[in-house]
Image (tube, rainbow, N blue to C red):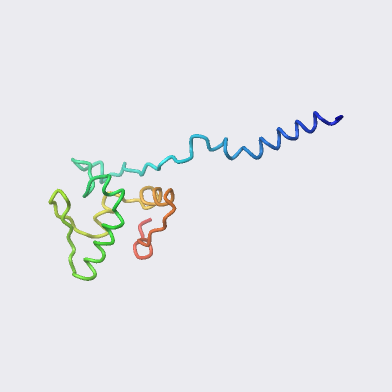
Length: 126
């Protein structure tokens, strides 16, 4: 085996190229996005909280938005009573007062979760 050294070097280079994507992503895979909560509207709030608890909003925000849309279209009901009994205007603007950037807030999580919400077919923000 006269070319053993060349074969070994070739195999090492091949393995380095083939495994590069795995090594370059170490520590990056499955890193959940951190939406940008540093907006002027949120900073002005005395109590920095959403209309429902964070866990509920992460799991159910689309159901809540769909219910708002249905209530407004079917029953002309434009308010939402939260679990803490506060009443909010159930409109797109209620959310967008604090979450002003579709790119920095909405799209980060939706891209991570590989979902394409239909909100932006009617509503455009940035």
